[in-house]
Structure formats: structure tokens, C-alpha cells
Image 1 (cartoon, rainbow, N blue to C red):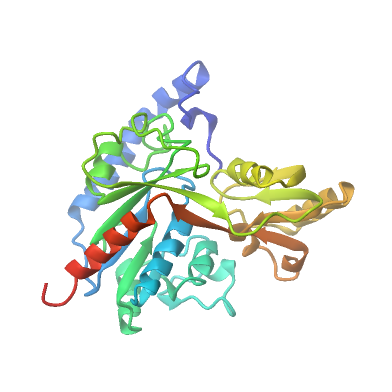
Image 2: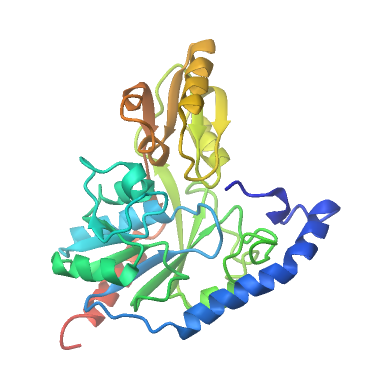
Length: 336
């Protein structure tokens, strides 16, 4: 879904304020239901450590690239991490191990295909069943993508990822705002916070986000391209949480954007969408470029015609991240 304008903090006047007020009773119900589910559910301990990468808002904050980086760091430390995702947008319920050579985004969702590039990845609507399947496959540690509001697994380390630019929006719970739950309640279950900004030079507004007095680690990270954009005119398109961030990043890297196309997060590209994009590229004598997450949702026949621009999560203090991971793994070692 696309984020409605009244979710933003700068939409406080006129109709935006009125819509939020009208939707507030539904927000109370949504927040109550989330809190009750978390309170009433007895989590399963799968027998290995579980690291959760989650957020408190609807839409993209950079969770999947963070999960990829953490999977890579754990592998570099000598562990066997596996990823676990709900598989949003895919038809398979799981548990099933993702096979990028056999599965499409229509099977398992787009994000699991990206996670599988970093480590073995599983999708399962039933998270405990997926966790046990990973354990059977010799996983030593599980990285749970987008699970902060899912109470079915016992977690040893929970990261909350925040979009440092969008923040908490209007600071209202869905549907009056973008929050999945009240900020204070969500942060109370976190072990660390990761604030994502535009780049290394863009520092987080810790005070504005209400993080100045937080008694847990707050890490700063950003998405950095791993290669320069292609030369020449480009038509960029994206169906992610905030497509404009992708377009801005391309331009900051020197891309010549003739046109852009925005789609909803996880948008399933139709033949009509693709024909329009191809016509647009032909009109501007341009090449098509998109995110890796969008690229895996394209039909295989079209993928060679589109450049996927890869990015990775980088940390201002990678040693702090490694320290959290090592401490958690040491504390979870047998006999501790």
C-alpha cells in the first residue's frame, strides 16, 4: 500500500488532522489487539538463538538489508545463520527453504530471495514451524526478518530499525498513522535501535526521535550503493516503502534520471505496467533501472532488460554491531 498523506507529521492541518481524528478509535482497537496478542502468546524456544530485525512503522525502513548484513557478519564470525521470513507476497505457506534457482517472488516473496543471497533462508507463515525446520537443517542462529510484533518465537536479541527521515510520522497507530504499535511499548521490547539515514554524513535526530535518553544501544546505519549507476539516460522505477529515497540515492550517485515511476510496496508488476515502462524508456532513449527487491519481482524474460542497482547496509560503528552479536552468541552458548 502507498502511505497516505495524513500519516505524515507535516499534514497536521485541515483534512489530514480531521481524518486522523476520525480514525483514532480504530487505532485504539488495532493497538489493543496487537498488545493483547503479544501478551497472551507463549513464545516457542527453538533451541537456538533468535535475532529479530523489526520496526514500529508500516512500510520500508531498511530491515532486509540490515538482516543481510547481520547474516553476513554472523557467517564471518564462524556461525551458521539461517534467515526466516513470513514470505509476504508469495503463494507458498511453508515451511520451505528458499531456492533462488527454483523459486520466484510469486512463490516465496521478494525479500526472502534477497536474504537467500546472504545465507540459507526459510519462509513460513507459521514462524515456529519455520524455526524448527531451520534447526533440523543445522542452523546455529536464526535471523527473523520483520518479527517485532510477532510473539511466537523467543528472541535473544531484538533490533528495531527506524527510518531517520520519516521517523514516527504523525505518531499515530494504524490506521490513523503509520505505527504498528505505540512507540514506547515497541521500544520497551527492543535490545537495540538502528536509525537509518540518507548517508554517512546525515546524522540521526536522536532528540527528535525520542532516543536521547534510551538505555539501550542506538546504532547509526545507511544504505550504500555497491556500484555506480549506468551511464546515460535512465528511467527508474520502484515499488518499495519509499520509492523517492531510491530515486534520490540514484541522483546523488550521479545518475541521469529522465523519468521515474512509483508503485506500492511489494507491487506485483503486470504486463501493462511493464509495457508502459518499456514505452517510457523508449521515448527517452533510456535504460530501465530499479531496486534489487523490485528486480526479483519482474518476469524472468524482462530481467535482462532492467538493471538492478544493489545497495548494502553500512554502520557508522560496525564494531558495536559485532559486539552485540558476539555477546548474544556467547550468552546463548551451551552451559551458559
